[in-house]
Length: 316
Image (cartoon, rainbow, N blue to C red; front, side, top):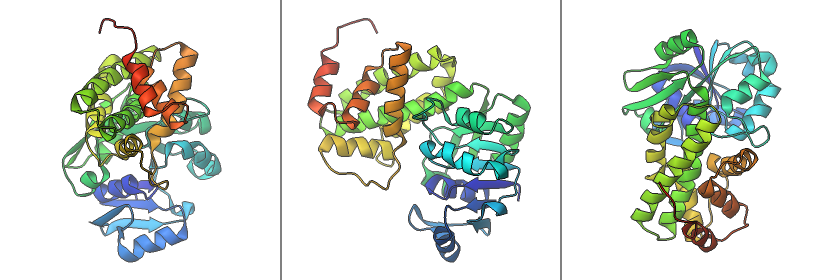
């Protein structure tokens, strides 16, 4: 088959459903058996059947496609690639995760290039919920790739009538847009969970977007990229819906409730990585810093709120 998807979580399964024909790799035999038996991902994406053209496997040796979509959590990507470098070293790898690596402080394409330098890499990111993609609802994503020829080929290969892909050569900007919006989504969830109101959420989103631009441009991204699907578009989606795992996580923190520890919340680790990166680069990112401090238990929600409101008045 021409496309393989590594990772059968909600997003990986959704991509398989959208493409209609692909090899879908699962992390263990039990997951593969359950998917093959039910022909749907009952745990992560219930009531959406797998198309007949989707082949399920847990054997990495069965992944023979040249184009491979990596639907692996951000913080697990480096270890996964290192473990499977013999099988994946010469493929086209398209990262589908959003975040910043805690150790290297780089995004998913940066991790691919650092771990498997002989591969050609791209990024698929933007405002999307897995269930929408799987059901064939209209969705638009950014396909970021520095190689324009490869980007055009991937756009043709991966786009569907309902999944519209826009090319962008600014990989750094697309990576950071997708990563940073998760941090702001956690903060937005905290605001709503703590009962601070819709006006406060709107203000936080706007000031959070300013933080996103500040860091991204400093690191070499183009401001226009952050204003597109992979930045502003994704920010709007994740800060306003409980379908967002990052928003739900923030909502639970704001309410003082527990959160399902088996649910991947990329923004939690990303907040810590970005807070460190901003500190090293001397970039002012107060919302990101507060989210990281709250998650690590250095601040309470009321302390974080008071600290943000006590910042000196300034120009916008």
